[in-house]
Image 1: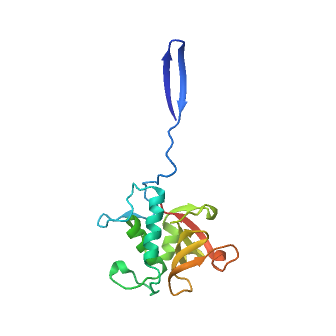
Image 2: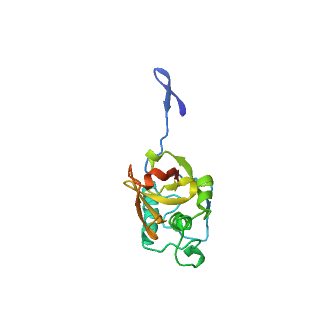
Image 3: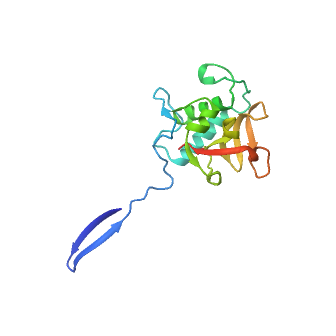
Length: 175
């Protein structure tokens, strides 16, 4: 909190005021387990608003809808298809310029800021079964992911009572 002493005709007055950051701005700090790739031009800059970052992540993820599940594959390595953790790594790389592990278990233990499930926002990393599966929260209790019984990139439900809802282990804020 900043403090300023004001002197006027009636004497000295002490004033306190706080500086607030608008809710629409996103942090420019990188989440744990992430570095920036200076060789890529991501869809959203580090200075983008939260909404712009959410849109970038979801746009890149949706652009891969229907891409087949192929274990160990990542299109950043010139391979066709993805597994779940290579998909999330690819999406954050192209949307935000992030470089991160392509291991789902390492994404569980080292990537992102811990977030309460009830506070999940579109673009957050969702981790299932302590890192056995990962995806990206799309809003409305839906997760965009690779595999997960679909065999391709698509949506799965995490609505209360659904199969996948019972397997959510963690949510990680990524911006």
